[in-house]
Image (tube, rainbow, N blue to C red; front, side, top):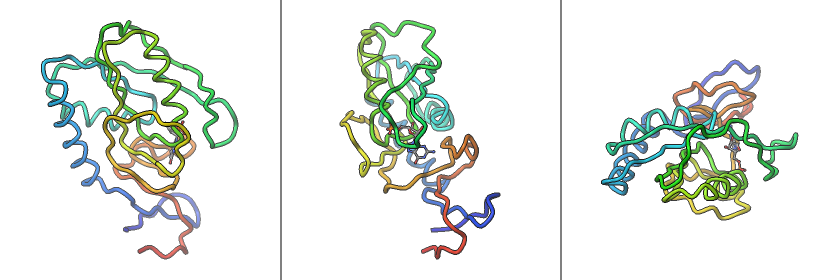
Amino acid sequence: MTAQTIDLPGKEMLVLLSEEQIQARIAELGAQISQDYAGKEIVLLLVLKGSILFAADLCRHITVPCIIEVMGLSSYGASTESSGEVAVTLDLTKPIQEKHVLVVEDIVDTGLTMRYLLKNLRAREPASVRVVSLLEKPARKRVEVGLDYVGFVIDDLFVIGYGLDLDQRYRNLRYIGHVVDASTPSC
Ligand code: 5GP
């Protein structure tokens, strides 16, 4: 695992997934999705803000027609642990009734946010709803949400970069990593 210097004193970033690994996997996901949705139009539903980079790269590998929509969600509660109580901070502006919706998420951790979102979307009577998540952390799963496409299954680590934030920062990194003490030996 390579380490990158970051602007946090005494800390460094261990790269978990390089830019090349991420991009290669996204190309595979795009090809699979294009094949599965042949002859259909997709509503790509981005969940702000974490999935912006992933969705931007993924949609360029999708060859069937697609419409891009966004939704903002926020978990209630002060802790970093998802509470399962979710507020819609930005709602869809168009109906999705009879549309094929593909939710694009950065990471599914406990699954509580996705469970809420899927229930919310299904009430709007789309033709279908599927989920593509770049990352999945099965160790912390609390509810089964049925992910249709997963980029990478990762260990129970708090990861940042490529859309994922630490206090709203580091979303613009091209790779995904996790912050460690600079003294931690990297393997
Ligand atoms: P869940 O409801 O599945 O527990 O949490 C989903 C949300 O928690 C994700 O969309 C993301 O915003 C946040 N989250 C979960 N794990 C991580 C992580 O390792 N890094 C970052 N930056 N956010 C995470």
